Amino acid sequence: MESYRTEWITEGLPYGHDYISRLFKQCFGQSPRDYHNQARLAQVQRLLEETELSSTAIAERMKFGSVHHFCKWFKTNTGLQPGAYRKRSRFL
Image 1 (cartoon, one colour):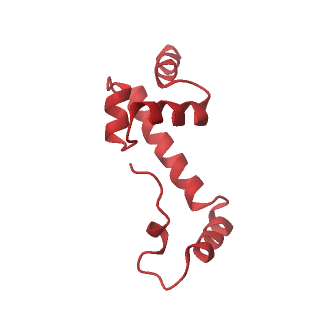
Image 2: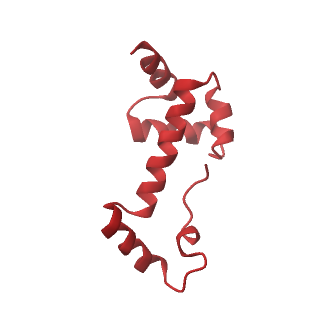
């Protein structure tokens, strides 16, 4: 639910972040940050589709820090504001 932190991937490992990131990308085709971002986006989309939580509540639950930051992040990643995404997903 939190933003990506570089320490996560190297915790308990004797290797640096750059090395682990390269291995991760070779195995999974994307960087650990991109993988985390996609997983976080999928969770937010699920919350918008399946709950009545407000954008503010989702921003708090997903630890965005502010609803403004959450809405900007969501629009950057989907092209839609959270409310518009919710309406569209329920219309389909």
